[in-house]
Length: 102
Image (cartoon, rainbow, N blue to C red; front, side, top):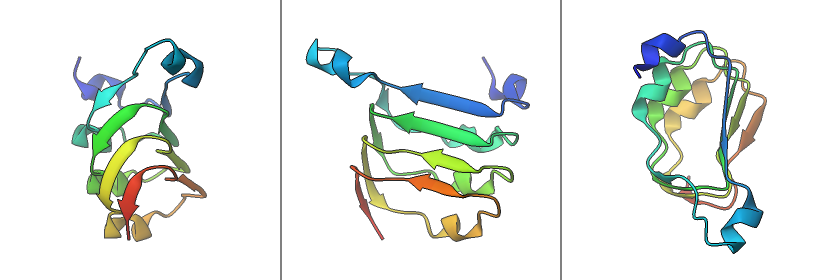
């Protein structure tokens, strides 16, 4: 499915129940798709308690209405994008329990 069909999506939550990890469920893996920057109506993006790795796509800072960005408890690494200073409406940023710098 192309993300253009989700252009009016306001909330995207991807979360692994930590109880499932005790049963051998490892959760979502891979990187955060850079194409998420095209979900321009998002007010909340939560990807928590998963095995998502790689860096945070700098393009996320182009989401004009984003108020909540929760990427805690993943395997993200590298610098926090300097473009994150351009968020106009962001009031909740959760990045703890990753391997981020900056």
